[in-house]
Length: 87
Image (cartoon, rainbow, N blue to C red):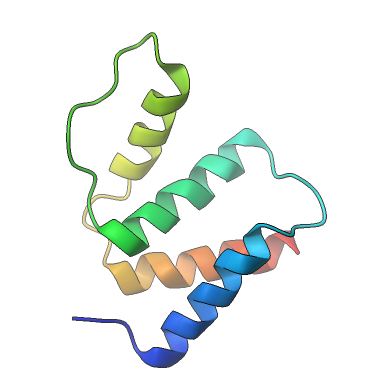
């Protein structure tokens, strides 16, 4: 099932906007942006959790895994709302 066209368009615009924010978000916010994007575009996280020596990959994996079960449209809307709040 694909997202309504208007949600897809707004999500695509938010993705573009995320690359031009007035200031760089803090790391926790960046993880949330990453996780919402991955959940919206790929669904639930798959694969092995990275080892404890790969801090960045492990943090990204955990942030995405925390959204397991969130439907893609909800993740898209949450992503849009988050990017709007950072403008």
